[in-house]
Length: 114
Length: 116
Image (cartoon, rainbow over all chains, first blue to last red; front, side):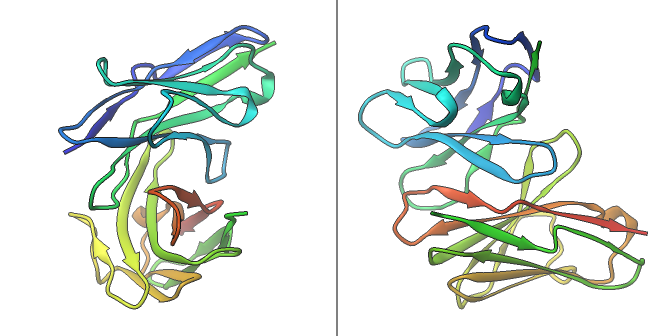
């Protein structure tokens, strides 16, 4: 079975500062990894995904994430955040063989302050 | 591309009534759709997985007779909350997986249900 741990429930950061949202996963099989963003009272929007190939994945809105197999991590980063990045961020994992069930982390609330 | 809509966006109903929520993939075909429930400040809880033309697969603890799911076409799935009660009040989100995508889900904007 797979599981996802988002180590920080809340991350406050000042505008234009860099940010890293941490995500660790556990799985006995190879997985695909995703980051989604959720703005208040909205559904989830895909930020980026790792399926295979380069371990550094670039997504929308200036976000990127790096897949580290040895550390079973998929941390999300942005070099300079904006007020508009304030939202809930979810890391998710799905096994890449069989089954479609996606496992979501508990979420990290990014709060960007002026 | 890959837009998923939900209707209605918000609904208030009386206890004991039934509510239907629609989930549509607007510009792609989805063989698989998922229904989630989200409580305030919590992650998504998968309720069921529906495949076009077949019965939905419900997660453990989700009542099949209470949350009826129909996936009649490649672009439409519906969730009906039958005999709704206040404890069913929640944010319901659907997602759809395109036929040619690799495990990527596209999410609807969600439906806020309030049962009085």
